[in-house]
Structures are given as structure tokens and as C-alpha cells.
Amino acid sequence: MILNFIRAIFVLLVAVVAISFLSQSVGAGDNWPYIVMVICVVSAFAIIIVDYLIKRKNLSAIAGLFLGILVGMLVTVALDYLLSQVFNTFFPTLSYPVITGTKLLLGIVVCYLSVSLILQTKDDFRFVVPYVEFSRATRGSRPFILDTSVIIDGRIADVAATGIFESRILVPRFVLNELQTIADSSDKLKRGRGKRGLDVLQKLQSLGRIELHIWDGTLLGDAGVQGVDQKLLLLAKQENGRIITNDFNLNKIAALQGVQVLNLNDLAKAVKPVVLPGETLDVRVIKPGEGAGQAVGYLDDGTMVVVEGARQRMGTVVRVTVTNSVQTSAGRMIFARLDDNGDRGTEKSPQPQSAGSDQN
Image 1 (cartoon, rainbow, N blue to C red):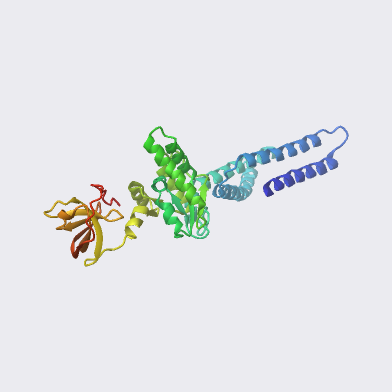
Image 2: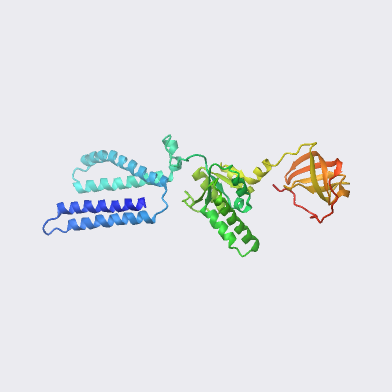
């Protein structure tokens, strides 16, 4: 609303200046003042239309443009005196329009080269002029950027509900488009994953403890970049943000490129309760183990528990004493023996005969 008001004021000011010029310049039989006025008004409307159509403006590109023009004008002014001396010494017979046209053409060329050079090297410009750079200043904490995989996973909503994220959480438009594509897939499994991801986003939006934004800006230097992962890395560098994912490959690539990543699987491992030797647990043994007399059960988080001497107790909840805990590539494994108090119950209700081990 304010921007439209400013645009209207701009057109009004241009019209007032044009009318003032017309009132002072018009003479008998003169048509050129009218032409100038029409050109001014039409140019004002053209500028507004271009400004309205180009919605995604990049501050660093605009700053580079103006700085390039400024540098080009300063260089042109410096060359003006030199060219004047050259023309007076070696080409004294040249007419004034030729000299003026040559200087104007040189100024345009210098301004173009300055703008082109600065826009192409703006990321390295701070090494030439210390403390000057074109990256946008980050207000407050660095934002978190969600990957498609972590949204589909769903645990991010539960983590965010705790209020642990004090920074902004960004969901890029291209990630949202990928979720929509997965949700519209003809494959039933993919369609279900995509819909779950969209439901997780709705849950995140409903949380009042986080600041969730759909990022719909322009990526710098994205020419030829294919794939959501590469765009996420570019966005993280551009916004000085951190990526939240559970994609192992993206985690490795981000580490190579110096982008900070929060892996949700690593977070899940870190918050698991630590089981020390000597502690007692209640676990339901559901299948025989590999060793003689061993039985296997699982905790609520999927951690596998190998119980010595419990093969005859399968299908029951037994109390065990932890003897050792081992972290493997497939997850954590706990070794235990039957507690002196024995089992807590002998119910043989139907139980699943297999359970997945912790893959985190």
C-alpha cells in the first residue's frame, strides 16, 4: 500500500515538473516542449511498470550496479582531462562535437566495464576493499533451512514444539515444490510420504513457538545448478544459514563446502538415555539370539537388548541387569542378564516376532 502511494507521488512529481517545463518553454509554433513533456510522463509510467514487474530484486546486485556506475563516472572524469590534453596536442583540428562524442562513448564503455566487473566479482570485492562486501547482514541468529527428507521424516515437528529453535526456520520454495511433486506421484508409497511432509509443514505453521517462513527469493549464481541439494547449499551460503537434514550424502557434501548441517539422526542419538552397567530394565524378549540360551528384545526406541539365559522366557516381560552397552554402525546394542527377581509376568499374548533395530 505504501509502495503504491510512493509510485503515485512519483508520477505526480514528474507531471508537475513536465508541466512547469512546458509553461516556461512553449512558444509560438514550438512543438518540442510538448514532445519532451510526453516523453517524461511516458518514461515515468515505464519505470513504474518495470519496477512492478520485477518483484524479486536483489540488494547485492543493485548495490553492485550503483557502485559500478560510480566507479565508472570517477574514472571517466579522471580520463577527461587526459583526453583533452591528447586531443589538443595531437589532434588540434578535431571539431568540438567529435571530441565530446568520443569522451561520452568512452564514459559509457568505462561505466559498463566497471559494472560488469563488480557484479562478477562482488563475492571477492571485500578482499580488495576491506570491510566492504555485498552479502546481506544477518539479523539475530542464523536461520535454519529445512531439507525435504527431514520434513517427510516428521520428527522435526516434535523437536520444534519443544521451543529449542530460537532462530527463523526457512522452507525454500523449491523444497515445497518437490514435496508437492512427491505428493502428486502415481506411486502410492511416494504419495503417502509427500502428503505426510505437507501435513508436517502445516503442523509447523500452527506452532506458536517458532518463526516459520516460506523462502521465495532469488538464488545468486544458480545458473546451471540442478537438484534440490545443490540449491540448498547455495541458499545456506547466501543466507548464512544452517541446513537441517537426515540425508547422509547431503551432510557430507555440505561439510566439504563449509556449510553447517544439523543432522536429525545425530540429534536423536545424542538425546537417547545412557544405560550404564548395573542398571535394571524391563524388556519383552521376542525371539531367540545367536548364542546359546540368548533371547532378544527391544526397547521403545528400537534399541536391541540381548539377554543371557532368557530363551525359555520368550513372549514375557523380564527384568534384566545391564552388563554392557555397545555402539555399532547399525545402532546401539545392550547386553544384559536376567535379574535375580526373574520375570515380571508370564503372559503369552501374541507379540511381533521381529522388530527393526535402531538404524540411526
